Length: 368
Image (tube, rainbow, N blue to C red):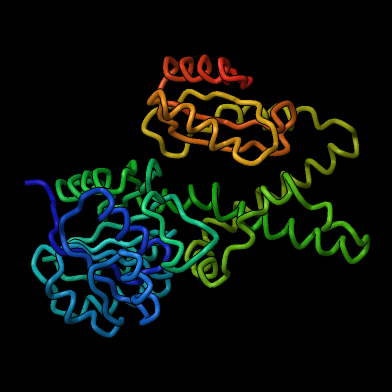
């Protein structure tokens, strides 16, 4: 029997919690969605249609008795506290509890104390925003994103696979099963250390601004793109770093060694090997690799910098029922500056799009 909850509870209706509710409703989920959050968040979430009803956090014991699926969407420290509370509560038979925390090992350890008649499956949707709160909820936030699931045993059983199918159906995501420790080491490499590096670069620019006024004035384009995540709120990242420092610390040491080696190569004027290596590796990572179920075919469109140009392109394609799967404005990229990247399901559709755009005065080519 497929897992199909009738009553879903979202604990903490912020960006992720609100987006979960909107995504479920937007995709045709017919069950009841209850939110537990602060009074102001509940009011906003109900107004936006993220939830059907809402209560304050202290109503957890009463609400959980009538819940099939519980999403814990708080910061990691609060998820840990909530799991401790849940382990002492009367929970319904067959309840599935999951979370959206960015680290998994500590959460899985806390979940081990839940009663045996309930299920727990750790989760981490690889998506989000530097913004927060239910007012920025997005029903398409999980669309095509990788959603990591970490079962307690490290392997997926019937319930975990069924839950994965539920998420893929109603969120439009792609699920991936990973052991908690493996997950934490991977995200430390591709998310946590890069975030610290972005923070360091912004602090470096500030230091130089004090020495050379005008430095921050020129910190636009590529610098802003590279350091965008440095604007994320610290409370969330405090919990991430605190629960994953064992994985982050050795990576920072490795990064320091690489920077030291780059510094020596800089002195000798021999950085070509590093550039060739990074170019080769980064080129192997598809720009469309955002969790799409398959590699997309990309088209580069040269466009004038004028109001309505993107709307014109999308309207032109829409008239011929050509669906754009992904879109990105490429900024300050050598050889591609002033272009728009469009992604399509396959090369046939991409070629149709190129022909249509070319017929209407746009310069377009397939990206290889």
